Image (tube, one colour):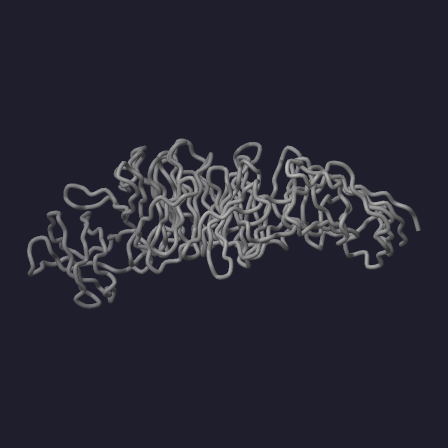
Length: 570
């Protein structure tokens, strides 16, 4: 038996998983709900939510900042894009995205245009001009002979298939392509082919070995069957780009259903031109990620280098400038990313933070000291119990917080302050379910489902509750007591003291702590000092937290440290 006086004045790791409860050196908690870890290591009750508007359905949020005076938030649901300015809906635009999974849409912005891609949808461009907001299909550059500068390639099902060109009874622009084996089906209609250096479009399918095609170029009839022919890399049959970015003034497309590990880069400064030409420095680039494993490109990130995140690993192209003859691409790590939903990687302190394929890791892709190799450090090593099928994430640079929405409706929140070594995870809960999160103009916006309705909301420091309609409580609980490197069998707490600032509500183990009445005046920021409670009782099951601080009152609370005076036995 012995006495102890134990103070915790840093909560640097936030809520940690039970397997770390016996680690004596961890400044963490067993529960951290609806509180943020400050840069100082203290704790503050989270901001409340302000309701912006009700929306018809679940939605994704896309920031669209053109300049300091033109800043818009796009709320996308179904076939509608609502445009918000200063939290007011100013217009709606109808799109053609019928029946697709919006959570797979990826996007990249260049000036006043956003490029949207989806594996089942031809790329779309959303623009703002003097006439308002518009959306239309992305089209590749059209040449004088009506050919287009789309990339072409060969697919595995084309191996050993030859084409013989013969005359058509229609006119001089039509021909008949006959293959040496069954190959054609009705879904080839309107597909674009490159045969004998001429672009052709399939007009009709006659049978499994014969199609009628047409071209706007003059052509001759080769005397032999052609095995060296190509099809458009992007189409309704082969699929459309899954990911998009801009890098070194090139538009970059990554992966399709039929070519999952391929990457295409446009001509420099000409985003509709994917003609490789003769391989000049500014011409288009096409490459394949070669590996013994099957890779599906999940997303691409333009940072200091071009980073390519795939289903089984992380690649990078380190060249600067990037040219067709100078492409150094290699795999650096083997974590992998999800491809069934778009979880946009976030830039944090110069590193790229992404969610792993398993959904249990939050990784930080960062260059080593020699800037030659990337490492993928785990940011949630101590808190994997909070990771439960992430569906959305965003980083707020102004608050140093990474928000990750989970499939079951709560948000895991990382408070990250490298200067004071704060890497603290906690949980946000509201009366309803978080569905999506985005950061726009230094504010954190969320889509929330409440009583089968969906709302656009944002966190606001001036709000003490959620939307003036829903109360929320905060709760923090200690890790199991360790005294003098021992796990005590029995603990008795004689007194507990909590140092607070600007606090108006506090419960210790569900007992209200008395705070001077004067702090409840409207202009009073709250009590600052030490609040204490005596005779907390005896605890035998010491794996349970010795203390829990909480409150369901919609008032401010900031906790700096917790001190417990008592005795123990082992």
